[in-house]
Length: 129
Image (cartoon, rainbow, N blue to C red; front, side, top):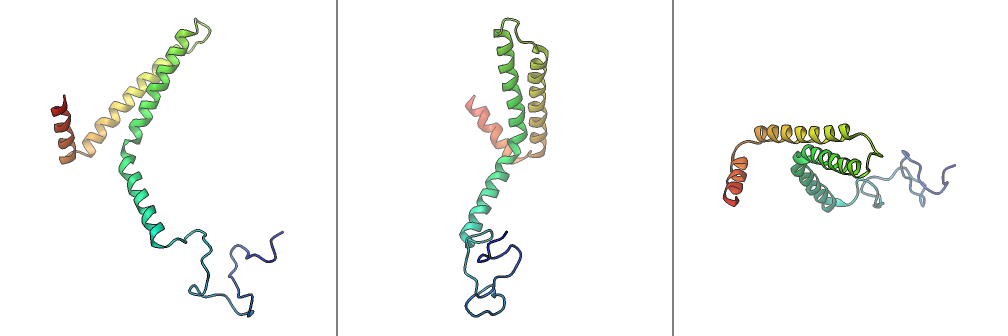
């Protein structure tokens, strides 16, 4: 059952004092639900979207790094078990495929994002080492 005193989902809000028709958007009180919060909330969401988009290009590489780390952990666990665990071949292949994934995505990202930013990064690395 629904609450007889609260609004139903999808139905317009009515004035309870006058018994009039639905409220106009300018007459409604802010309820703090979705879509509320004004320009500050919209600006904050835009900043979050920009940050996610600017960092999102590295996510495929992070997946490969995770596969490499999990493969290394599995190899160590298998070797330290003294023969109680098997699956060394799978762990080695996980590590190898992780490296292939990282190298392939690095090459693709280098080709896609080539230009002044890549040249700047290359110069920075060259001067550091």
